[in-house]
Image (tube, rainbow, N blue to C red; front, side):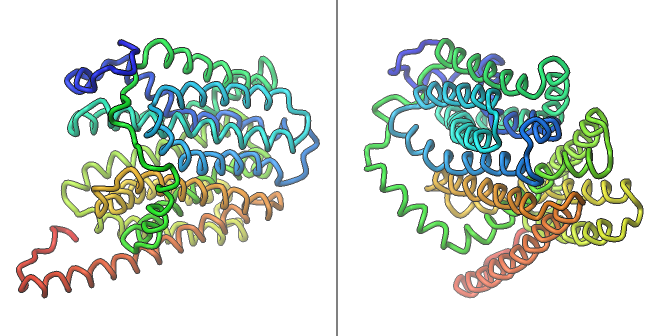
Length: 426
């Protein structure tokens, strides 16, 4: 593909997405998932090596998520002004350097700081990859491309812990971060050689960069946005509360081996991915809002059982893992439908809505991960309470938002003389 900044967008828009192009975008989109999941099996070894106090390892994950949250808000507007290639190149370089610093870290404070920089840099790949698809393909084709990219997000949590555990056998926990640095360098080289500029100068944003913040402020107080952004964000918060606590919870409290931990972690990821595929079938029969309400109810019920199981020990490890499996599986139904409900009212500001939603999701994820770390006591109880709280609040906000939506529909129906027709299955 040509690398000239003046490459006409129509050249890409009329072409079918090549496998090499899709793989590159998928790898760029995987900066976040790989940075989160690959080093999870190394938690106990890092704690021993760096003499980390209990619960502090969770801060390395929380700060990475905070970096992803902030980076999404910053990188999106920048790429609209300067193009897509430069942020990707600088982001890949920063991710590689921060990963190398992690490998050399000999204190938990240095590791936490480097992980925050990794998050900031990793956000460029996640945000810009999606922007490149939007630049390059018409709507119908871009939907298929986004679906292919989503597969990477689903597969990464399944494979990453196993890859991380394998790397530890050869070079300790530092090998994981060296592998991430090499991965970032390869992605940067691929961008430099094989990715054209899809956002040429004549299409770039000319407004002052600070003008984006009033747009964010207006949207975050819009009940149509926050009423469904909150459940989508709390769902991700539940996931990251689980991810942050999983290593110590499973490998220390329940005494699983690293290989057994990877298997349990992968099975829960399969539940999440599988339910998302079931959602495609359900959406042909029921409305987005009907699926969202039903999944939120089941998820909250399963979440409410987790503290009971954690405190009483009834059913032991199998019952507790089954409860987590149900909670995570329901998120495969909640996340896509809540996201669709968030984006639907804002067709003219979809980019701002997407960036703000991404920031809120990762901010909540960072907060729940930190919460689990602060209250770490060596048992599954902090994780169980945090996950149950996320599920319960998500259900409450969803029901309030749905009530408001129904009231607005009634008002619109009256205003149009009773001609409005409710959607099937709503």
